[in-house]
Length: 475
Image (cartoon, rainbow, N blue to C red; front, side, top):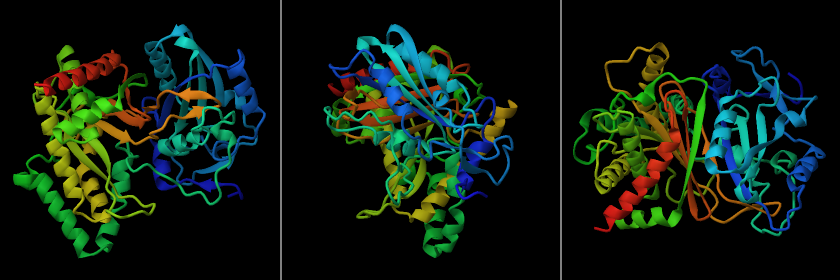
């Protein structure tokens, strides 16, 4: 191995192995901007020219040493000595004036295409032609190179709090700080391929951690999978999810939709009902899915179950370590009343998170492994087309990624929103990621275009569900 080679870890290898014609292991982010009032006509052209004139730094200049050997256990990253800037950084345009729907259509098409693993596996598309002279950046990166949260943190280093700052350097031109630590978002395992692997790796440490962790794990599994009474009646077990159209084999085609709400709207409902912001978001997603599935005649009798990555950190812990777990929670799609739906979601998430908070980090990881392990059956069933007779583990994934609470700017352009674009997989045709930014909460919906046509309607129905919850809360 050469001096500049970097060996891929086990989790990173999984993303290389998971790459198939229909399942693509890249994540992305969509960032719309409003340019400064004094932006010249060639503002974006000059931005790209400035970036081209500077060095592209690691990890953005790294490619796989042997990309043709997909299932090699010895993959490593090496520097691409023939880095092609114009391949990785591209200018695109909508038919002006482009609206949010047209932007979503373009991102859907871009997200449907594989990254070229013979090159550094990322692309940045600078999209022009939005209404009001606005533009957007769509960054797509393979999960094996860096995880989505780390990529967004790197991208964030190009942003400033001061609108007067004029620094056109993009993230790939900015060297990493000295002695960098690999940062992972607490709720990062937003696709279920990573969470079981991460969790399985912790089972040994649970045993090694002693009797206490083993007792924690055993007690939690009994409460979730067997007991299911008293304080644990609201917990969702590993086989609680109904069969649904979300749990089918997916195609290569993607559809992306967005929704944005004022943070204070969700916060007001949270305070009124004693729920978390995330509970309110889950309840309106459940309301949106209920209407969406009724439209297509596919609403199950029982509630859809969401897989939720959760960060559980010990109180007073100011270190960099995180306790990462997974919970399963109903979205209340079987409940017509919006307030009762929120009550149900709140009770379920409180019970699940309360249980995790009584466990050691090692036990949390192993518990997550056991909870999600049956999902392998639903993935295999989706691939083969054979529906198992027992219920599924989950129907979709919903992640919540905390973002900056102050407005940010790039070279004087105001960042309007941050919309995550995640990964659907076989057996889970819909993935929803939320990200807070400034005074907004941004929803990114990504799904299989062929299994979930007209996905934009789900985004609209989520807005309807929020309005219905607000109206019902007034009575």
